[in-house]
Length: 411
Image (cartoon, rainbow, N blue to C red; front, side, top):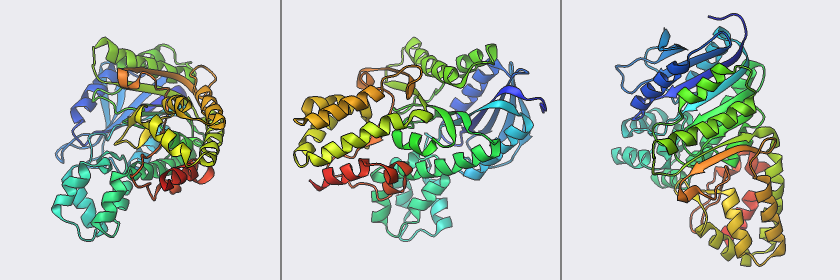
């Protein structure tokens, strides 16, 4: 235990009780190439796959992950488990600045886990086949257990199918994430300096907006991440070498180190990473409100133009999330409305990456993502049902995008 305040405490929550367990072992080893110092604490909690493996906490030293606690079997999808870890890390390893990395439940919930949760919440008309169906749907990718329980608690198999297939599991998880981050900020007595999402699809406007009161900077990917995730050796190596590194500089370093690691190994799939200053989210949502209003005023003609832009721009997560900048670029080309065109241009201007901007750093590799600029938004195509849970999000409650979606789908 270090009672002196370090410059940084870097907290990594390895939710590895899934098919990514071996990737977690590799990442823990990468952390050891940097190792903690008097100025930088590196701590990890690792839930490995299988009930024979206990969840353990580590103080990461150079060349050794020192086990400091054996927690027995835990549920890494339970927010209380995560919050207990953060509380422990802040108490045992106090620092001026804190980074929290939520490490990928992207391996998904197994059918047996779905079955167990369904039994706990008393899911009606539930058959064993439904566990397999739900685990292979978008619901299988959500991070927090209460999200899974909430969806499985719906009254009928049809409701549960709609809920997870239209991406609402993702939006429900965003609500749960906001609740967790609020409690983390209270525990620390300050906002998180950096939230790292070493997980899939989390560089998203709705996520950023939900997180903004509790986090200063967030680093995440628009695209699904490969199993190797972040290169923790180079990510932490620079921080250990320079513990006075400011949060935006650390965030930008992570972005470029991540992409570089995949380029150097010749990875053939698309990769994205971006760092966002959450204090500047209004720089994007304000022109997006103007764009939403202009599109509503331009209906019904706008519907064909939106669909044309969607067909030709980068999308993710079962065609529910679109890169904002690329969509606006294609919308400018498709629209006959000067008001829509001007608002779309303003949105793209707000997404120009650089120090002091909303997106302080953005990098990508691969043809699919070559026009991406770091942030996605919920934009369902025609004939897909808008999630009933989208309205629960802070962004949806406070801004104009949901009204545009409703008008678009009505046409």
